[in-house]
Length: 215
Image (cartoon, rainbow, N blue to C red; front, side):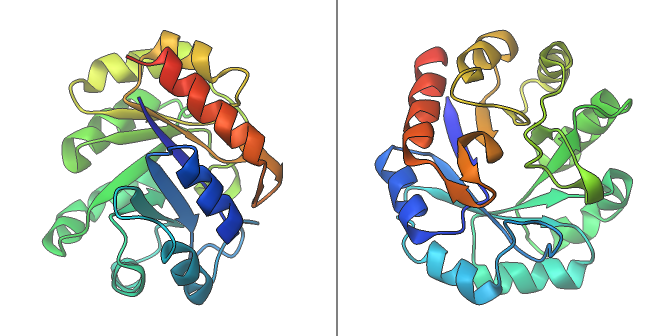
């Protein structure tokens, strides 16, 4: 079971997550509407303390290919996590691939087209992040969607991996993992004191609970 913690803004939180054996970390950039948004310079500082065995993601709302290239060039992350208009992102898939960008697309689990979008994203990008979107299409809302839907998405896109997000906490992540059987889980607000400020003990508990419940 792979665990990702997203929306980090402080070096101490990055270090604590690494010590708790997190698998990947997400940093929000290019998204001024998010309370967890980072400047490029701040993101670079945080990324500089992430060890090589932890996967690094830049999390952003898709606006243009130029913006993606700039983020990828400046931050040199392992993957880009794209939120926003799914149909628009899918329409740019050939260009994204031609640039050699490694992307995962976030699908809103509450969308009536969650299953359709997840299948298309898995086919075009190889994996899916199923989240609960807020205004502007970004996650980190702290709101869950129906895990029965998540399980159906997981079964439909298999063997492509599914990362489950949206409303997960140390208290419910084990149940979510057992019901949905995702490849990984992703948390932001569920381990925070306030937006962007992580609670070290919650991060430790979340990671431990998820990994214990997983295969």
